[in-house]
Image 1 (cartoon, one colour):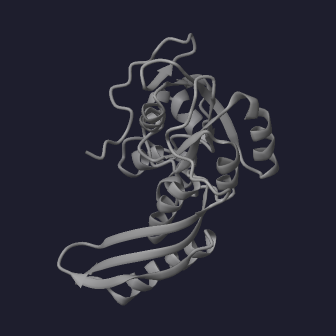
Image 2: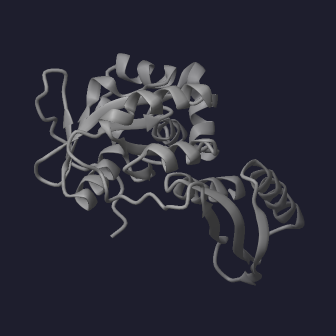
Image 3: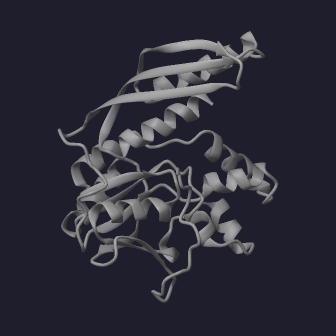
Length: 261
């Protein structure tokens, strides 16, 4: 839990082109918590702090009558003197996604008995419980992206947030989405790519990159050992996101992902 809480917050900073620096942590432990529970949490926290170069600089810990409550606030520093927001993309910009899409959602489906992951069980469970937003991506986002955010609510939902903030349409091509072996197995077994594109909890940056910067961006990603895939483009049109099938026709999506309100 500690590792996921830290990773989820680090993901936001990375997708803004910022390097995580410090953390504030608030914990409310239930009366039933044992010393071993706290020790295990502390071990996971130490590992996560090390992974993202963070220092724990403050917070509060107490005991309460409810379940465990964990509140994390991260502080970061822009890699290149600017914070990359959701607004700023322009028609013609290319949309890129780091990593793969849908694995965490498959992990949740596996853990809740909605899908049998088989040989992919360990990988998708780890994707759900222990996300790993790429720290090295922060510099690329800062240098190349016109707009960006992390995919946490669901790819379609978050691309819609970017499109709405930038005042344009994000056109995402379903057949170009980067799938893991588990994702390909899910689709081969009759599952929908739409399920993966709306699942959420991916914690990977989604970035808009000006067309003239696309090749340098891809080269820089390869040099950094990061996988990026062009999944669509920005175009003039109704602000939001449209998922397209192989023929370029809109795919009906009932819900683009998680809605906070």
